[in-house]
Length: 153
Image (cartoon, rainbow, N blue to C red; front, side, top):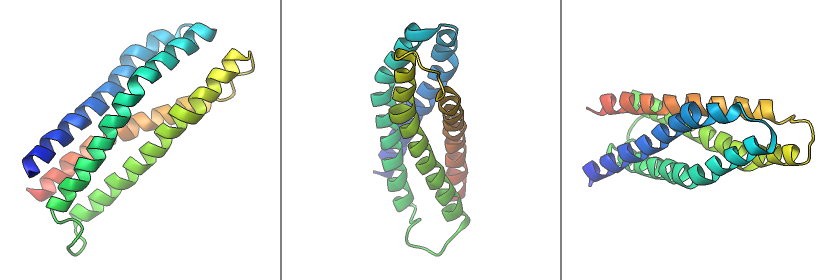
């Protein structure tokens, strides 16, 4: 069972991290050269297509990660360096979930409204900043996963 959890965890993380990186570095840059409603419509469509995949993969990675931590008895022993890294990874995952929610469901739709209504795009810098922060956390989490796997072996 532990090996199955590990495989599912790695596959979910690969989909989530790989998809995020592809979206940020492949799909978004050419769209950023566009203006107005066309740009907003394409970004909205990318989001609609990616969100169910990304959120599902993220959720599966979190659930299987918790299962793996339980297999490694992380929750029933005296605190160790494994527990400290696991706590840091959990905190970053929580921060990522909050940032992604803001990006996907609050600021993104808010910016789309500003564009549609011809208002100043005041949300764009915040949306971009949170998106970049989310990317950094997305890249940091697998690194912490490797550290955890080394602490277990």
